Image 1: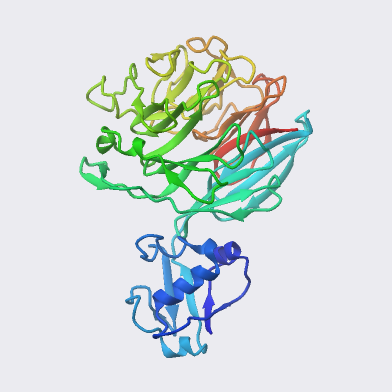
Image 2 (image 1 turned 90 degrees about the vertical axis):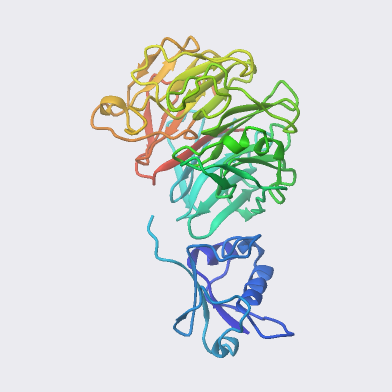
Length: 100
Length: 371
């Protein structure tokens, strides 16, 4: 199970508190794209809030962090860090610093 | 009648203001969806417990919420606003082509008869309809693909479709307004569209007879006179008595004919209200005096309404969707400001009082009379 930290506004939309645990079923390695697919399948109200519904591109003011690395611009189909896949570190979705 | 509910959208959430028919004492409920921009929330005329909300933000995009119990609980519904077919281009501010790109829903307009049918006006300009309570949205493509569409340019607030009027008398007739393209009418439920901007004069464009390019800020209609429309344009207040085919200016003695909202009295179809704003670059009332202007003659002759409104050092704005009227007698008028005040008058505008003073900047105001 992959641990995912959602930003407060998306936790409210998804009606969850704390971390969520997401299973990314095989075959093949767990990737960012497959993890986001699984998040959206479990919480369809988050469709379009993390990435564009049609292009699949990350929304401009959303960031992905894990293992003290910024994975926002990582290719979506490369495997996630092993510690994330093992559930030792969370995959963090957050709103970028932007005022307003 | 059990009461009145005012639906307020703000930069940081939604608020529901309720009162009994006297409209003296108010309860403030909110914020709902705190931290999100609520461009519009409104209720179904066919079922006042059915509410629709356009919730958006720079971080997480567009969400549509629906309530089936008058705002006690909410559910997210569909937010897939796709442009159908060949997306094509409109003009950008610098005159270069730019592909249509969805940004947000500015306005939601529920059907008069069916709580599950609701229209949505988008930025970049497009009109959508849902027949299942907001679950699935279908673009009425004939508007965006009108031959003039490739020449539409955004106003300062974006290329936004902000006004939708579902004609109560002519089946299938819809009016929309787009900044800065102008007003359009469909007589076939959105299958085809006609620009209705004849008579508009806009100094910002070189060809005064251009069929599009006018920055219409808002249009309103009294249901008993469906062929009469009132318009607040970027500059100028206008009226049409032939379903938009021709317009004439009725700014008359207004201290400024720039403004955003325009509303018509619920029981007097020739009584209209505007809030003059000093200029296109100075979005606050002339002389720092917040005045609603009322015309009882359908325009041309206007009187300032000041009782209860700040008459010095007031520099707020009132946006296009931030004014509404109730259907009680006497008619109630409501408006919200960029300073977070929501004012109301329970006597057709003669006297005003704030319902709340310190909300986030107000984007939209609607009112429901509850059965």
